[in-house]
Image 1 (cartoon, rainbow, N blue to C red):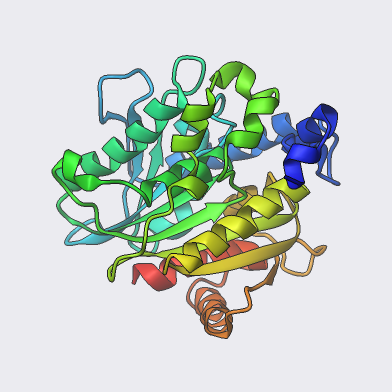
Image 2 (image 1 turned 180 degrees about the vertical axis):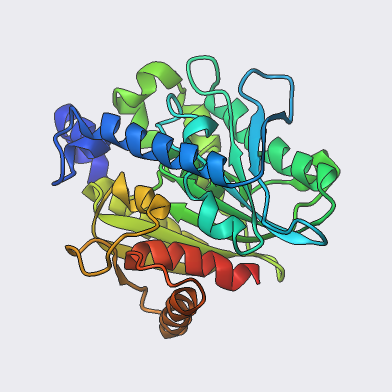
Length: 331
């Protein structure tokens, strides 16, 4: 069969261990460092924005939202829903508000989504919780004029599963305008043979029905745009999954941009969204290599220029890319 099936158990474990691929920090410290960065960024965001925390969207312990309101919440506004990673078994919404400040200042409501991680939660329930949370937002906040999803790692997987949702059972249809998927996993089958499944306890059937690669729906005329991003220092398997999923979406008629982000690893690829004074010329972090679609490259370049001119933030190009992509499409 080739590919991951030909890998030894040890090699497959390495491929799906993001902490082993960063050139910045060793694998024993990078996860703690990531937690510290996202927690500190979230603390700053909570101090600077008007918030409503721990909003229940269901009866489960983890079924809660943190909402960061725009500076002027009158009238209608777009909402960005951020879905955290952590291999479906760690992290929470309490470390997920770090990207809010630049967006709320532009009139965007930011929602940090909580869900029940393993072992309390299982993958089927996590996917359902994300879908239910979006239905809740539509029902509770009639001022929303478009939903944008941003997921990192396992959160990118959950965001991708939203694209195959049959919304008839939820009695509402969220107006999803765009989805940003950062360093995600879109085929869960390889994980069955790694340490990741020790906590998840997935069967083959569970992995198949919860793999976005196996659930790609044909795009409808009103389908949203999808941005799939991968880090230079993601493992080859993570990078392969991003490439193949973006190809599958494109083949099904979706509008997809694939970004290969130089100088960043699986962790700082998302951490940089919290840095208000990141110096563009320091190191190589954030250099964006756009997909082969010329129109996407032009749009991205224009969006970065707009962000700099309107906010004067000396950010990394990657940080600008995500914020600008969102702000360009949120407007």
